[in-house]
Amino acid sequence: MKRFDLYIIIYIGLLLTGCHEYPAPPEEQPRAEAERTVIVYMAADNSLTLQVREDTTEMVRSKGTIPEDVNFIIYLDDRLHKPAIYELSAKKGLRLWKQYQEELCSTNADVMLNALQQIEHFFPARHYGITLWSHATGWTPRRDTFGKDETHGTMQGEGEMEIPELRNVLAHFPKFDYLFFDACFMQCIEVAYELRDVTRWMISSPAEIPAPGAPYHRIVESLCKGDAEGIVEGYDSAYPLNSTYPGVLLSCIDCNELDDLARVTGQFLTPFYMERSQPSAEGFQVYCNFLDKYTNYFDMRTTMCRLLSQEDYSVWMEYFDKAVPLRTHSYTNKWFSNGLCAHPFLEDPECYGGVSMFVPLNVYDDYGWNAEFQKTSWYEAAGWARTGW
Image 1 (cartoon, rainbow, N blue to C red):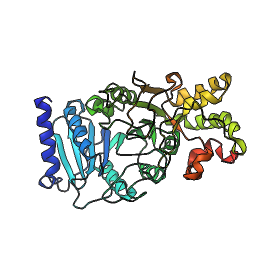
Image 2 (image 1 turned 180 degrees about the vertical axis):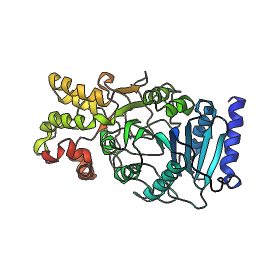
Image 3 (image 1 turned 90 degrees about the horizontal axis):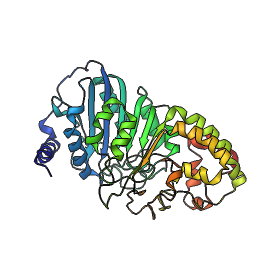
Image 4 (image 1 turned 90 degrees about the vertical axis):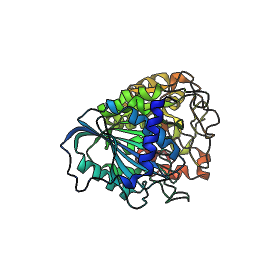
C-alpha cells in the first residue's frame, strides 16, 4: 500500500471514530444552488462495515475531481458509529456536516426521507444523483430487498426496505439524473420499472457484486458529471482484480424507455405462459440458485433469445437496446458469487443483457415467489396478469 493511501485511511479512521469532536456547524444556512448534488447513502450497519473504509478512502483520494459547483454528500451508518452526514470537497476534503445523537435504522423509510430532505434543503442543486450502497436482493421481498440494518433488524424482513417504500421516499425529490445501486441483484426489470418515475438512469448489477464494490477513485468524477456511461465503464474497468473477484456484470437502464419495453415484452412473452403454461427454462441464464431465499434472477435478454423466433426476437431487441443501451461484463465471462450461484459464468455472452427478469415456475410456489411477483408493477404492465400466473 502506498504511504499516501495509508495517511488517508488513518485520517478517515480518526474522523469516523471521533465523530463527536466534529459537530455540524450551528444554524448553517442553505448553500447557493449548485449544478449538482451527489448523494452517497451508505446503509452499512451490517457485515459490510469494513468495506466502508475502503470506499470512503477511494472517495477522498478522488476529491480533486469534484468541481466547485458540485456538492458531494455522504450519509454513513455503520456498525461502529451512530449515523452521520459528511461533505467531501476538493478544497476542504472530508468534513463532518451532521452527527446524529441516536442510533437510527437507515433502511427505515422515514429515516431515509428525513436525511435526504435535509441534504436537499441545505445543498440545493439543479440536478441530483444518488448512490445507494448496502446489501440488497433486487425485488424479492423480505430478504434485504434494499439494505440491511442489523442493529434494528436481525429477524427476516426487519431492518430492510422494500422497493415500493424506496420509490415512495425518492418520489419526494426532483427526478434524479441517475440512481446507482452499489449493491447485489438490483439490476432487475421489476425494480427498474417500479422506480422508472424517480430517475432517468438506473445503474447496477443483475448478479452479486464483489465485496469491494465500486472503485470510487475511478467513478467520483463521473458521479459529479452525471455521466452514467462513465460510472459503468469506470466500475467495469476495475475488475477482475484477482481470482477472488473474477469480474462484475453491469448495465445502465434508460427508465424513459421502460413502458415501451413492458408493452412489447408482454406482447411476445406472455403467449408462452397462458393458463399457467411453463416452457422449459433450459438455456436461461441463471444468476442465483439459492431458491429458499432468492429467485433465479434469469437474464432478461437470454430468456427472450431462447423463447422467441428470430423475427420476434429482432423486433423485441429494438426496444431492449433503447431501454438498456449499455451492458458490460469482464473478459472472463464470470462474476463474483459468495455461494448464491452454483455456476457464476455467462453461458452465452452474445445474448447477455445485464438485466434480470422473473419468470414464473411451479417450483416457486413452495417459496411464495409467484404470489409475491403478482404485487409488482411489472406484473401488470408486462401482461402477466392475463396468463393465470
